[in-house]
Image 1 (cartoon, rainbow over the protein chains, first blue to last red):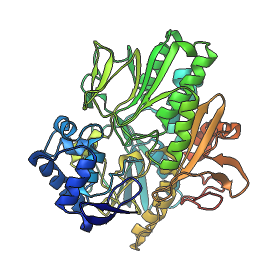
Image 2: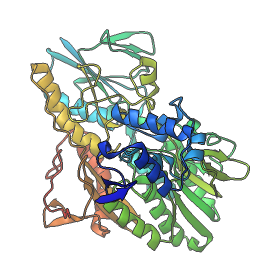
Image 3: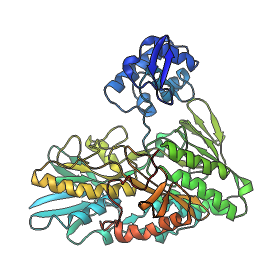
Length: 102
Length: 411
């Protein structure tokens, strides 16, 4: 479905995840973060950039992997993106929700 | 003579030994299978043991009786795989060369991955039911437990048989009702997922059942530690859930052999091509069952479907022909829902479980994603099928290795 955010038309799925990363920019990221009530600090951006790079390299994302990434630890990840950090952070980063294994 | 070596004589390895002995015969081929254990366990039975539905003798047989006579069973510890040299190092220091290697070493629980899980309350008020010892200890606990807060918990994905914790919750509800003490037990289901299951349609059906049975669900819970003194599980966000009896599914990991051999990912699973089941790093190594990192369920049914395709691929590999890219992640699982009923789910990499009939489109007799007694009979009959048909590598009539889309209600 179409959605207007930060003055831009973007396409998202039913859960609100961007379906086309090329529509993402930092303003879109900030607006999506605002929807989740998260003001973005420099630390947030470091993690978002890390997630985007991992996605680009086709690495399957998991909480465990982020804990071992060296970029942040799980505790801080939860402080920065409370409740369900991986789902929230990937949504703001404009990348797909990580497929949890079946 | 060429050597084909299978590591692990569980469900997957035993099935491969039985399949391949029909095709790879002496004097051209020698097949051996290595496992240090004496017993073969029907692992789905671990779910029923705590509720005294199955007894230990129902789920334990010897490894030996399922290995065909032309296959050499080597009872030894596997120290290391040396993939660059096509060699296996055994526990007694001896070495074994292979032309083709099949890794089927499975997955097991690793409670030590979570702080406090294997603490002072382990097997006192904190239990697992994914190991024989854990399941048996839990049975003894439940026989005399007087009630309180029962918390059923999944640590992190992936786990073997992702529906088993839900089945445990349903069976617990049923068990306490029969003991006339359901009112003394508060059941909470705690999961790191955002719902009861990983696939939307099944999640909807299963959450409805949880609700109907008065089981509370706590989702998005990523455990940081077990507090043994306060008897609480605490997540990274600081949320605490108290328990009197915690039944947890600890982190699952592949065999430590992969770490020793430098062949696993961060959970000791072997990187594997999800369509051909060939190792991503070594062309003469194939991986099936729980040991691989493919995004399919870690379940016996998956290993069964994989085994049919892997047999073809190994024969193609020997002939030097291209491998079939055929495995579609097909899984087929009975889900016990308590009170003598079960539902059945059938799905693959791309198609989630939906309603319909199975295995005959429009007829059944089994119904997908709906509770029925027939499904429950199917689940109980499955133990017999496992010992007498599945392990022997016999094809199960009407059930294909790749998933069929007919008779299913895709929106």
